[in-house]
Structures are given as C-alpha cells and as structure tokens.
Length: 176
View 1 (cartoon, one colour):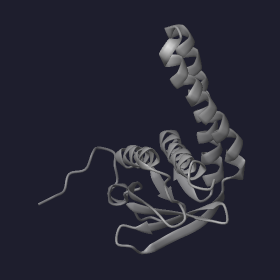
View 2 (cartoon, one colour; view 1 turned 45 degrees about the horizontal axis):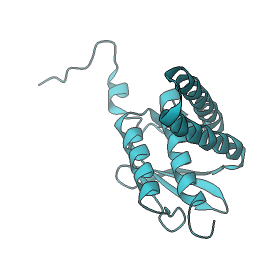
View 3 (cartoon, helix red, strand yellow; view 1 turned 180 degrees about the vertical axis):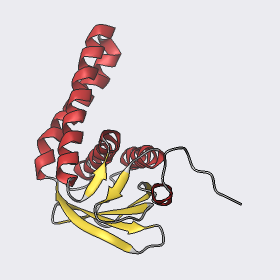
View 4 (cartoon, helix red, strand yellow; view 1 turned 60 degrees about the horizontal axis):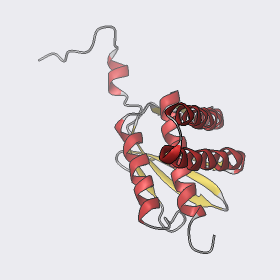
C-alpha cells in the first residue's frame, strides 16, 4: 500500500514534525503563587501546544517536549524529543523582557478596568496598545531565539504569553 502525501510535499518534510507536543514546568524553580497563576500557565501551555511551529536549528527531529526551569533568574529551555532524548538546552536571560512584561501587565490592568466603565472606543484603543506591546515582546523573543529555535510569529506570541504567565506567577509569589 502506498502512502499518499499532500501535493508538492516531500517525504522528508512529512517525516519531520517541527512542533511542540508538551511543555513541562519545573515546579521547584518556577512555582506558581496560587490557583489564578496556575490557571494562566495552563491556558498559555494549552494554546501553545494546540498550534505551533517549533524547530530546533541543526536538528531534523521532532516533535519536541520543552522543559522550562529557572536558574539564577534566567529561563532554561531544555528541549527533548518525544522519547526523552535530549536535543538542545540553552539559557534565555529574561532581563531584556522585564520592561515589556511590566508594561504589558500595566496595560492589561488598564484594559480590565476599562471594560467596567469605559466606552467601546476607549476599550478598543487600550486593547490595540495591549496587542502592540505583546507583539513587541513576541518580536524580541523571536530575535533572542534566532540561531537556536525556528518559530513563526504566532508561536513566538504564544511563547511570550507563557513567559508572561510564568513571570506573573513568580512576581505574585510569597516573599516576592
């Protein structure tokens, strides 16, 4: 029996699956500060897994499992194949994201406040600003991943959302 592939697609392309199938969070270094933070993380992970384009440079494999942890205020991306074989690990400094994340949280608070008592036009303007800041963070993340991981813009947006959710859980944690 012959396998049929979509027209114009080569067998090698079909056999590689450049996407994430799971994201695992190290609970010891990235603890959540409560049910709200945990829910934000779960939603961000679900959205990322649901649709993504994620390929490790110089690796023809996939799909991938991403293990995230924190070491000395830096985010560790430990990427493995589905069978657990280690593919690549690298450290991402979150320092360049701090200002964008802070601005993003502030504009989100303004947006949720505006929903209660502002006009639809005002809410739309705040939402456009929120999306603009989110896009800025996503672009910065894509730049920082360049040469290590290939992602499309939508995947960079979902990864940035996850980083924000992780940061929110840390920022609101006990003693922070």
